[in-house]
Amino acid sequence: MKRLVVGPMMTPEYNEWLVRKINDNIPEPSHENSQSIEEHLRVFPSELEIIKQDFERRNAELEKKIEQIEEEKMNLRLDPDV
Image (tube, rainbow, N blue to C red; front, side, top):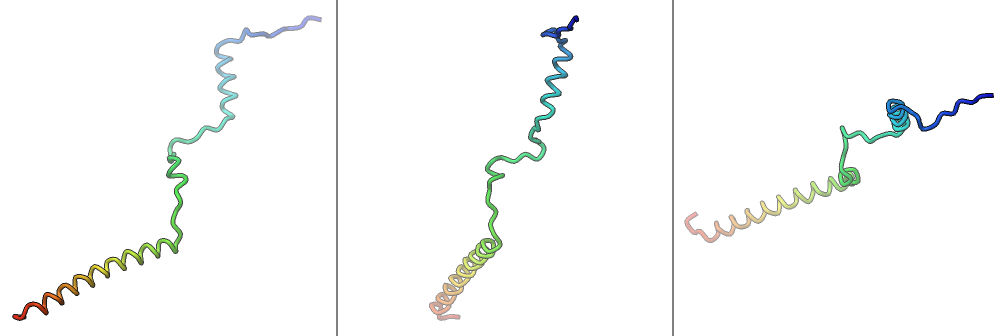
């Protein structure tokens, strides 16, 4: 009985096809919507934290307004012509 032995005599086209066939089964990351690691791991603030930040911002604005009004009040007391 004769046997056909297939050895390393593959054509370059077959070898390229075989490599592509094997590598096609490996998923590659999509670069269309890629994010950096820092963006991917970034923690989003909770609703409570957002409300707290908004409160602190408004509180700071009101404190500035209070200081301005108090300064105007002091200036009005010092100015006898008004």
